Image (cartoon, rainbow, N blue to C red):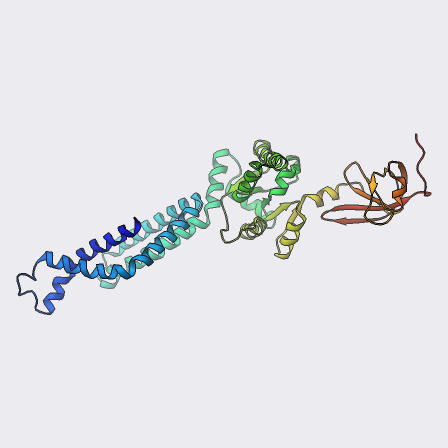
Length: 367
């Protein structure tokens, strides 16, 4: 269907161009003395035939270009198109006003060429400004609507936080749920940004056929809903996406670079990837480890060994907060509550691990 439309368009354009320009061409070659040739229908027919021949070579490339353009437009977020179109309209309006003001100048180049150049330049600049500043426009509308902070206050807050006002949440930290409690306490400043591609991933998890994944996805959506209704940092849903990147982690890193913000996560691998790209990270696990009670080598602890360790004769115990304790020779005390002495502590972004050995090498007495 599209191919037929392009071919018909070629024929119509050919007929029109034939009527407009062929009379001048025939005049140069003294063809207009013949009454049969000097006929608008002849001009239209000749123009149509010429464009029909050209259409045999140009129709396929034009159809492919239209399909490519259609695919790009359909994949673009609606707000990108909306604000880009608004910016383009403003740019073309300014070009028209400037051209109208210069029309009084009787210089052929200014009156004929300059309006075209202004339309191209200001139209392009308008589209780019509308496209790239859409997040600021959306946030300005949201804050005005809700009576929140004004743009000037947001800029001052951004300056105080060294430009790291935006904190971009990843899927894992939303599903984890602790971010809602942390934000409610007021320890997180600025704006919590949730990209649309993260919401899409959450939706896919919530629609999964696997019961555990479905429960996690719904929990994440509930956490976001709770954070939107509770007092705390503003939640900004952004349609910003990077269609040339498939991995969500890399999209988060690129978005953080573009917005000059931080990535909030509890994913150890994303933490490393962001560090490699020079993007700052707020790791919820780091925060949880930082507020855990300090344990130092030589301190006594009372634990219950519950299972074997990976190494020979090791036993595994856990604190109430989930910290794993590796007990040397603990295999012989599985199922018993024993007193241990801390020998060392290993602290990483993935968590904290305590190494200990039995005190006096025997089980503790029952109370």
